[in-house]
Image 1: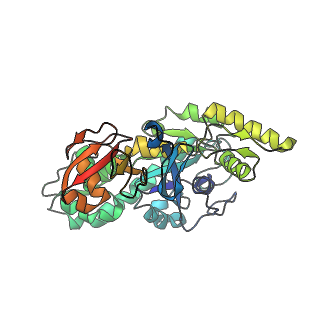
Image 2 (image 1 turned 60 degrees about the vertical axis):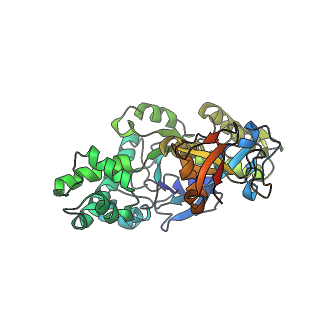
Length: 390
């Protein structure tokens, strides 16, 4: 899984990336601070199964379980700002769009305060709907160009050939089939016209990879009201939007590192442990008020929205001993795996090791000790032992 962080210049993408990954990247109040994409890993936090199982602790690999919350690594890619005309190469747009090909979903960062335009320049009350909408136009145009360039490879052929020709765009065969269906196009002996290719690219953009909008700089006066006023617009109708403050999240992480507060990234509140001066106390009070109204800073909630609601993933825990919830060496709940909803027991076996799938006998639900067949669909939080023939 790879999530791309995208948007116009000077919207706070790099700061958002930094707070999600704890990687220091160049941040400045001018366009194109980022040129080469930044790569990092964010930690998705979910309630660990050891808590619901009544265990004192788990033995998560790398120690990634803190205060009952399991941490799961999510790769992120922070791509340089995209501007109008990016699909035609403006602002190195074709290179930046190419950087996004392998992403499974996108977090689009926008300026909820309206103080920057589509090129990252200072503005007054710039329309949020316009900012969100322009990116779809550029990405769809880029997709149209890519599909058109490869059209000769699948002309007079079928779905497998389309999927092979477009494999570099990061869409699987099911996404391509769904887009063709949505566009009203046949997938047998393909003879798509240029107009058909345009409809296909439109459908592929709309359904192929999910998007979540991060309405950043929501801590600035008037920003949240602008978001609420824009929610009913067509540009927002099918895209979740989250109010966020990467700046506040950054301050909290620095304050926690300095021992001034006790705070876990993604938490909905923090606890004062140090002795801030008057100015620091005032800042922390503003942040606390924002978090109370916003249910946190909103930064890590973006991961939850993308992974669980948009990409429809669940967390499962494979074990080798269903009675002690451990592997053969006694390590309790060593792994927490993200898998798509509706993943079957057999598919989990294949993800753990291909040999397990080849010799699959059954699975066992460690919570209920019930035997599960190969087609049994797993649920979020399941702890499962795979039984294979020796």
